[in-house]
Amino acid sequence: MMEFDTIHYSKCPMCGMASSAAAGACSICGASGLAPWPAGAELPLDQRLTASGRLADAYALLQDQVSRVQQDAPSCVRLAWLAYAFEDMRAVEIWCHEASRLDGDSAEPHMLLGLEFQRSARWPEALEEYGAALRKPGLSTERHELLTRLSAECRGQMPEW
Ligand SMILES: [Zn+2]
Image (cartoon, rainbow, N blue to C red; front, top):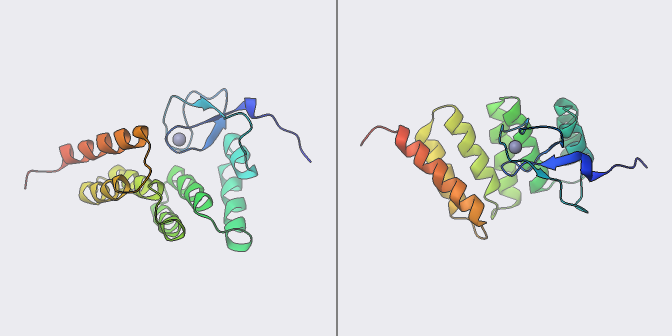
């Protein structure tokens, strides 16, 4: 069993993906303000691969787990974030829809789909996804503020109608 120490890892406040503690910004979504990985929290192998920059290996491992062992929403969201880093829009959509099917109360897949649409200047679709995310139960204050800010960005880009 390989020993590891979470002190070498940080966690992105935006996507929740692992980075090296030395990294200044998230390699998946580009967010700054990385926090130390919570002490005692689980750090799955795919996240350790992600933090080491081995994104393709992390993706392959997760895909294998999801198809054979354990199909859960957090794994699908991590696959979707990796696909976001690869700029593979079709895979982002597939994994976000799968995550939503597995956990209909999660805001995360809708937020990520919104970001993907926003990146492609598909403002109305992005706005729709952020709206869906904002209607989910149990949103943290930070998520609520973030989704509200992202929605305003999209509205600012849309022509008057
Ligand atoms: Zn991130």
